[in-house]
Every structure is written in structure tokens, then in C-alpha cells.
Image (tube, rainbow, N blue to C red; front, side, top):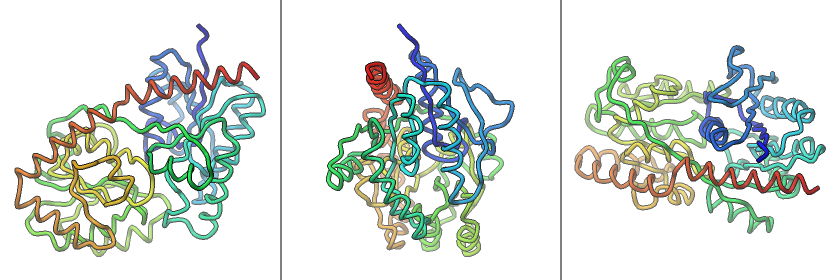
Length: 372
């Protein structure tokens, strides 16, 4: 059987050092190699070191970009698509709805393209009028230009169907937990297992780190709140809520790999405060690692966590404060919720299943390309 050649484009690259799309590619690409595909991931020079040309059997191609808030993604994606033209891949995965504009470059040589659109990006608070306009136009291009659209949640699938009459293939994220005992990361931060609350996300307005910090002021006790994350283009926003933070709040920056897994493995509870997007990888991972979940009440988050979480409303920080105080008074309840979230993750979110779904999709796309 022919070994199909796949290109993954549009992310910052792997190993993951940023967000959800990077996590998707880091987890998915090596599994597809194991399933018999040849996979190339296009990476940005700022995020992947120059001596890193392969990762777990995946080929890495590093290309530059223009590193500003509005140009980093489109410039790198354009260069990646132009580079891919000469390589004639059997199928391509392009991520981020804003990259829909570049689909025709890949399809010039007959390469079928799957576009993972993520959430409803035009709703993100970090974008000004120009950014929202770009994403609004991109949504319309996304339903016309790719061979297939991938959505990661039923809520996002419904949005594209109701607004544009467009079908999509729903493929979620996965988790393969590898719990770690307390170790170097907890020791370095000076925190004890099961005696801290954990928040993990990019520090951007729609992820509400500022509201989590605000809510924590009304929480009793001495458990620290560990706020893991950062964002390259939000320094003023981040500085404002850090300055106003309660002394019990810790800001260790972005943490990846074993350090991240160690924190997930030993938290008392995990706070998910996102309000835009589909299935959030951090939430799925927190579930898989058996965390008690406190989750912002949105349709997307309820689709993922179901009845295994305690919910709050980010516009009303007092609702998060109340849930945190409730858990501090009820460790048995926290443990019960943690067990239920792990069981739900095991049942619904498996990287093996996700990889199989993508493999089937790419084989179908490659077959379409051959018949052109």
C-alpha cells in the first residue's frame, strides 16, 4: 500500500510550546506515522529550535514569519503553503479558520485540504475590528475553499450548518494521561500535592484569567492559585491583573511537558474559564488526569464536561468564588467529581480514536485527489 504523504500547516509547530493546535499536532502527527503515514509539520522559527528536524518520526520544516499580532500566522502560513507546492502532498491539514484564504495555494497542485476551523474566532475579545472582520470573512471562505471542514465540537458544527448550510466532520481532541507524582515542579513552586487550585490557558481576555484572579480574592483559606500561562501580544492586559492579584496567586509562566503533567496530576481542582472556542484541550487533559473541574458555563464547555463539573459564570466572579469555597469545605465532593471527570474522559476522549478518525479522513481525501 502506498505510504501517504501529509502536510500539517498553520500552527506554531511542535513540540508544543503554545496552545491547542500545537497540542493537536504534537499528539496526532506521531500517531499517524505509526499508522503508516509520512507526516511533515511546518513550524515557526521562533518556536522550534534549528537543530530539531524530526520529532518522533515526524518531519519538521522551519520557516520564518513576521512576528506581530496580526501578521505572524498569515505570513508563516503563506510561506508554508508555497513551500508545500513543490512537494505535492497527498493531503493537507490546515488549522485556524483565518488561514482559509491560503487553501487555494495548496489545491493548485490537486492536494485535498482539511481545514480545522477551531471555534468562532471572530468572538474573541483580543481582536479589534480588523481582526473580527478577517475572521468573519474567513468563515465564509472556510465553507467554500477547503475539501472538508473539521470542527471539534457539536456546537461549532451547528454554527456552520445553521449559518452557512455547510456540513463538517466533527473530530474532538484526546487525552492519554501519564500521571506523575510530586516532583521538581511542585518543589520549585513551593506547593504541596492536593493543596492548590490550577488554571492553565493563554492569558487572553476571552480566557478570563483576570476574572479568575478577581474571584480568588473572596476565597478563604491558604491554598494557592497557580496561574499557568502567558501570551505574546497581551503584555499590558497581563500586567494589570498580575499587579492586582491576591498574594496567594502564583504566576510561574507557561509550563509544558512533564512539568505541566505534574501540575495536572496533583491539583486539588482545575479552573476552566474560557468563553470562546470549541473543545478546549486543557479541559480535556484536566479531565483525563482526574481533576475536579470548575468550568465556565458555556454550551461548548458543557458538551465536553457534562455533569462531571461544577459550573460558574465568568461575568459574575462571585459564582466562581462560591464554588471554590464550597470545594474547600467538601474534600469528599471534590474527590467524587474528580473520579467522574476521569471516567468521562476515558469514555469520550481518546487519542487513539482521534487518530483513527483523522487517518480515515486523510485516506478518503487522498483517494479524492488521485481521482481528479
